[in-house]
Length: 162
Image (cartoon, rainbow, N blue to C red; front, side):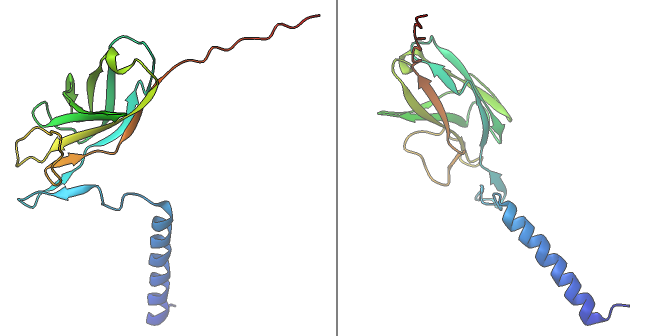
């Protein structure tokens, strides 16, 4: 039978092991949220995928789908695209809580470049549309993801003589 000190020691050992496993697994640990003025927790948008994530140079206008979570609606959500000298907010064509779509015009696909996409949602109490400059604490950012415009490299097969 366990005595009280042994039982406490065993429980402490088990709890320490659980905390060690959680620490080794990593994770957000609750760092991707902000608290609004009324004290309600507001989660930042999160991008889990972009389709397509690569576009060929010279392509026509392309609709890009951004999937994730915590997106707002047409009145409080925009997508910031940056790369080279470009830094602008794009209005989504369609938006839902778990995804949105934007139009990438052919003028942005004339040379190889990697753009960075970030979804911004305004905090619910402010009833504003995210703009540049970004207002910290008001415009909540997602994680940034890349959208690559590439130029295919032709591959020539050598001619082999017999």
